[in-house]
Image (tube, rainbow, N blue to C red; front, side, top):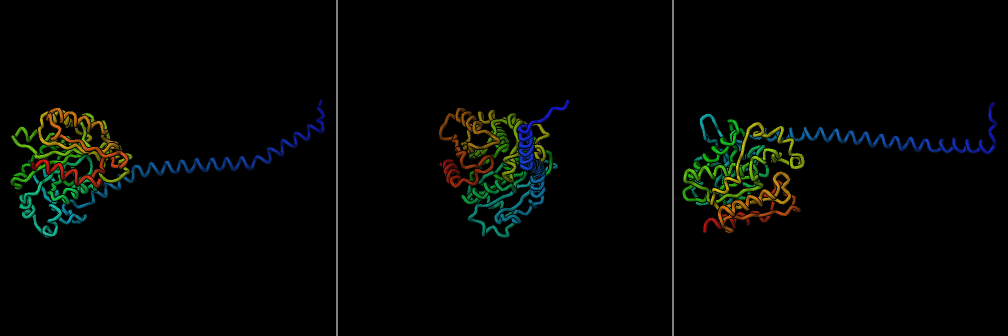
Length: 350
């Protein structure tokens, strides 16, 4: 039997339908807005993924398009390119930048002039860069410009397998290349100071080279380590710095897996063990916000070297405040860096 609906119940039902009817357009708008936001989120994430891959690849291809044999093409007007042969079948590229005050004199000069210039009495720095890229990376040019402005010669080496250098990059090979460059420089520099600057993985190459020279009865006059790993054993499990942009600083794993020349080779670079054998004056430069190599690594290097040399004067640690945002590659931007380097070099002359 069908129940009779009272007038009051009819009013309630009618009011409910009206309420639902009035809410429906609003609900649809909220739903549509939610769908739109989700679509934009998915689109943004997709674009981010595309950029994560395409930007590094484009930058890598662009860096590869630079003719390293012509440093003047990128504004280095007192730099010459050199190719050396540390071993049979291996050719390595080197840029020699003369002191800035000689830039006018250097215009149009050939290799012979540059070689003779090494004997002018100015301090000389051999620059050993980190993994990835080549000697044209902006932060590497930045360090060369700082040193040149101070009146020093700079020889920036691309190890075998890097840049336009031939050969297979191995730890022993990288060390052989830098040892060869040291002897090549010493043959032409007379009594000039010859120092070495090692950045990142280059710090391991630096201490390997220093120990190898020690075995030969030779040594650098001074060593600077920037963003240094305490050991390559730990470095193997960390992404390697890329020389080009902040993008790699935020996402360095891309460079590590795509453009890391050493990723398929075993290496040790026992900086911790090497430092125990060295007595060369040492300065350690490290940013507190270095996201590739923790600042604790610099502190441990300092502790080991100071204990080995038993000297507060021969071993120095210079920290750069994390608020400056230098990360792993940006120390060359620091306005105090020239004075820090000048003071260190002057201490080698006393």
